Structure formats: C-alpha cells, structure tokens
Image (cartoon, rainbow, N blue to C red; front, side, top):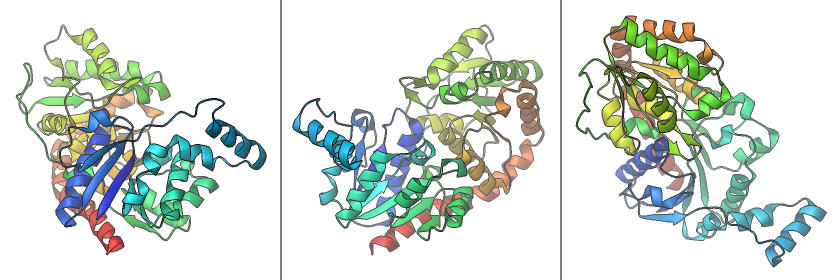
Length: 386
C-alpha cells in the first residue's frame, strides 16, 4: 500500500513535522506493508523524519512567460475561465506522483482555514480522476472558512478526518457524509529529553510560546504578553522558558521570543530555548514544564499530552475544538481579540495556577481517550483501503 502525504509546507514548522512524524508512525504501526512518501514544500527540512520511505520535492513550478504552457494557460483562463491546466503545471511536482500511489493524504491540518485553495482543489480533482483514494487527514475548518466552492471540493474526498468535534459537527451540518471524528496524531508523538538548560527549575518552570502569526492579527497582543511575563516574574518564583515552535522566514517564533528575552535577560528566571530543535526535542522540554502558555497549536498539544496545564493564545477553531474535546469546555483558551487585554491574560494565568491540581487530574483522565481517538484515524484509513 503506497501512501503519499501532500499539502505539507516543510518541517521548519514543528507542528507540521509533528503531524508527519506521528502519522507515519501510526500508519506503519497499524497498516502492515504501508509505505509512506511525502511531497514537501521544503523537502530538505524533512530529512529528520527517518521513517518516511521517500521525500519528494513538492514545490510550486513557475510557468515561464510566453512559453507554450503560458500561452495555453492564458487562453484557457481568458476564453473559458478554466485555470485547471495552469494549476496542473504549477503543482506538477505533486501531480506527477499520483499514478504511482494508492492513497493520497492531504495533511495540511488547517490549510482550509485560509481562504480558497484552488491549487489543492485541482490536485484533489486529479487524484480522483485517476481512481486513487483521497483523504483529508486531521483537519480543522471553521464556519468563517466555508464557501460553496470549498464544500464542493470536500465532497470529492473518500474520507475526511476531523481532528476535533467543532469541525466534525460543522462538516456534518453541511451535509457531508464522508466525515469521521478523530484526534490530532501528534498527541501520540514520542519525546526526546535533552539536558535542561541553566536556570531551569525542575517542577517550577512555565513555558511561553508566542508567534508572529498571532501578533500580526492583533498588534497590541505583543505588549500584553510582555505584561504577562512581568506579572509572572513579580507574583511567582517560576522560571519562564521562552519556547519557539515555528522557524520559517517571515513567521519565526524565535525572533519574536528573542525580543522578549532581550527585554528581560537581566532576570535569570527568563531563559530562551534554542531555535534549531526538532518537534520531539521541544516536546521533551515542554513535557517537563509545570505550566505552558502557547499560541502554536502543536506546542500546546505537546503540553496537553504530557498532562501539563495549558493556557492557549488561540487564533482558530482548532484551539477551541481541541480544548473542548479534552475538558468538555473551552478551558483557558483566549480568542484573538482577547489576547491584547493584559488584565485578561494575567487573570487567566492566575486561574491556571489556582486550578493546577484539578487541571492535571482532568488531563490525566482525558488524554488516554484522546490518544485512542488519534488511533481511530488509522482505523478509518484501514477500513477505506481494505
């Protein structure tokens, strides 16, 4: 059984790495004889994932101006409003591998949260045109993300695996019958525990992750997070470990966290984790924290899955849905509009500290069930291909 993962931007986003790494392990553990290939937008960054059977260059191709393909594409768009030829050429690094595969997994969990995706729609159409199985793997989609065009694309899939219940109920409510509920595969990902850095307090370190993606959507949040750091230093004796999780150009957590470190480096209780670690190494550090505050979903999953009480600086339905499935409510999740409110951030942090014992108990009860739901995704995949 040959499976190709696509719609992956590369592993400088450690959340994307976590999805590929954990999904590969789950599939190979449960589906005997499965071989897994990855089409990647940054293939050189994925060599750290050793269990893949192959990594393909999945980068977009450029249609040279005045070439035959350019002229034909232009005519089809101008006279027939048909962009399929152009999109096929642009995404040929992925399309050309479809004939050799049995199943194609679209693994960009929140790719459908960012407007229309005509490129992915065209790849999906070509997968089905060649009689291959098409699966949307561990997705999150909010009501604000839905459109008629996107809904028509979703109907093409043989199987849609929603990674939290808010997305599942939305898609079922739209009349889709190809949807199953699971949990993000990263809940099952292993961890690697490196040596603790100087200044780390065992049992008394709080992790803080913040991202340019969130900051750009709410510019005032950067000041509020600085106020939160100050509040933690004044009201507790904890060490704050600034924890990056995405290191992409223009979307680099390390840069924004380094700015905070420069502001507070005179205080030995503020430390900055390195910006070059892989997903399992970051999970190793996060697993040994007392609390975690995070904007990146897979950084918070690393915390949840190790029973670390977590406060989420949320920016999409996935944050809310994952928390709801764990706690039965959106627990300690702040919306994009709320995170510029310093008082609200500090109050939520204080609430997390007050409820530390209860939160840990709830996580210890819920996470084993969430991990079972991660395995459900592979069961549904196995049923599809049998």
